Image (tube, rainbow, N blue to C red):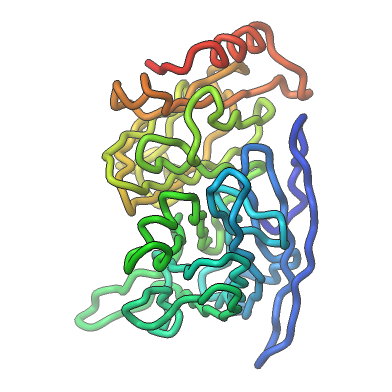
Length: 337
């Protein structure tokens, strides 16, 4: 997932590896996939080479209808999830996505934060989508910061972005997004820290990952592990994302660059439709292991079920004192505070 061997599994988590390789005009990097508990997945090169190598990376994504009436993206046939797989590359890489539409509906894949031509826009406006049963290739490119006119600098592509459908049910993919066709897109810059665990949290109207408590994912990590949260907003409601007992810097990475870094340190941030951000925390740093809530801090949203649990186990993976009781309370009561 992150260019090194990641210590995934805790209980209820399963790892799998899928090699997707090809050759086109240079080096094409193979891809691995790791599927996590809670319906998140990751696709990233197994052998990243060096940041800035400008590799062409290829991945096949399958769009499928799920038994629940939702739709999802997956890295193998029959393995679609909500959210879809985390697509992750280095700044300077190009990502070629072969989207296989295994549904009977028109749909697409549209990115935020990267460069693409109109043919890879994923919108009906540019006649860029998959008909039912069709396979189509989308190409997204990234770049490092560069000096622009007048001494100003043009931004690079590094950041916590996202992708989603833009064609199912209308010109903007509103039905596709509502039914789960979305996922995280991470573009890293050389020197960025890599996480031990990675979780995607999507506030989609009045749901988290299209679920409400007590069915919202319980994310797990061991005390002291580096954990990355990728937060995405969809739908028509305005939200605030809050993580109990942990905080981060309001900048691109979530980390301070030094003791005098003026970035604001926060534990709550607006998460509105079309927005995305990410950050890393050390699990249980300064507070210890336990069951820590994450939720929307709009009160009637959390009361309505927009709340989940970040379970920080002991360093050896065992359950900390009181955590199971907290999980039992969560499954009996869906509210947050």
